[in-house]
Length: 140
Image (cartoon, rainbow, N blue to C red; front, side):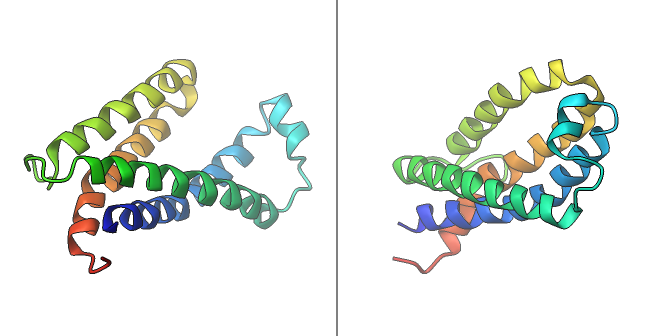
């Protein structure tokens, strides 16, 4: 059960990292994009937009962390390697992140660096840090 709690904590930590980055990216993009400028007009308060985005990211990323925690629980006892306590889980998360972010990187050329950086942070938090959090936990 420590794996599920570690997934929740990792997801919430990732949502805290994601919210300001996503808010600044969306608000900087609204000048050149008609759909985003209609969604968030120039008069929109950055704090209000951040609160809406944080609600969405906190819910979705903690839910994803819980599901990945269940996957980590299923892979309990797998071999360690490459600095990870559970190498197959880290490879699974890396493949999942690659499948999600590769089309976005190909489609959104102006945001390519931000997407690649966020994909790496996602693999580090979910794939590498989650097994350590579950191992360090005394939640049983």
